[in-house]
Length: 241
Image 1 (spheres, helix red, strand yellow):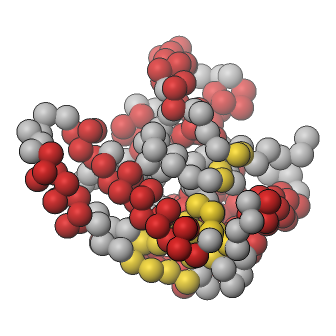
Image 2: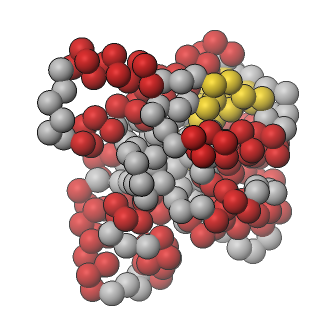
């Protein structure tokens, strides 16, 4: 990425402007232990050193994710709170009398509970919610509607996955976070690439150049079309050309 320092400065300025325009005081970010949330958290901390908050929200999650979320927070000096949503999730499933026939319907409850939690802290502190969706995932609809897309701002919406890695390195995110296999953590051993059916490298290449094998191209175009209804998104940062 050319002039990454300027890009980050522009991102931070954009965050400050948008928060001030809304009459708010800072930013809240859900810390998942993954690279996207780490980058957004680091940008939020730069924009609002004294009024940024990371929220760690395990929900029958891999303990490594919480460990990595705490590592990110310690690395960038971000204040955090932890809200364990496991019992809330279980209670809701019990009330729904779920029959176990639709894994996604159940799994998507988790990011929607997290969205609700983030907005609690946002309203309590007069903050905005900074989302963690990147251009790769937004293109194919790889996010939960009114879950992780339920945010006020999308700082990295104009960056494909490999660019997010570049931002992470520049911002000093630990290598273990940068190199871990991307996962939404919706169920055990779930990975983004395994669920998508192609690699981020293939997806990023298609987005940026249009190049892909016929099979991958067909999958990406189909996913993009089917997820169009999900892309009525909040304000997005667009880089200067």
